[in-house]
Length: 259
Image 1: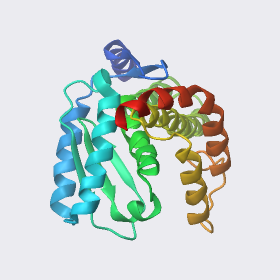
Image 2: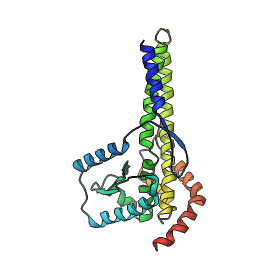
Image 3: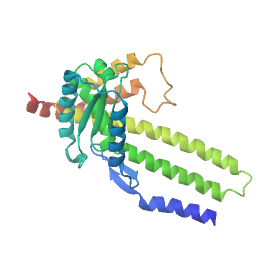
Image 4: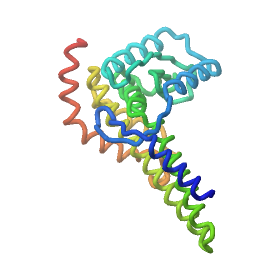
């Protein structure tokens, strides 16, 4: 009975899944019904209550200025977005993030490194690209599918003397798959983000200079590529250079509107 129940749970998960088309890249992704907008809004409210928010008018105006143009480039790719741009006062934190629903946070440490609006647009475009691609919901869906697969293997091989071996092998397979999946998301967000920046009238070539800075910033904390959830800096820069012929015309067309 347990075997049938577990197999039925996996079938139910698959039955609820939908196919989502990622904006800008056209990739089809597997996503279960997830209210990621509500979760994102709740997480953002929690962060604002716990972390120090910057009152610097220059930093706040800069982030809102760049963010508003990126949001215009996103357009209908994020329906119902209630855009909100917040600067968190953390000079040692070189980071930014975006959450479903149009919630974007930028740390003052990142503003120190991304010295131009073009570079800031690259980072904000990347983070917003994760959201429009619904990478978070896709990861949740894949994790649920992986968990269901583990339950199914556990149930169907329980009487086998190789039961533990089957489970261990599946664990290695699933873990490697999720690692590759994370790298795919990072690369896709780079691609989407550089397109958003270009469509917003920001120079996409700034992506290369910014990641070169990040490479210098991260010296001494290098993680081998096969263990990292992010592409290597070398691979990321090479990919960005490869996308330049695609995105420069978008920039040339858009920058006229923002002169």
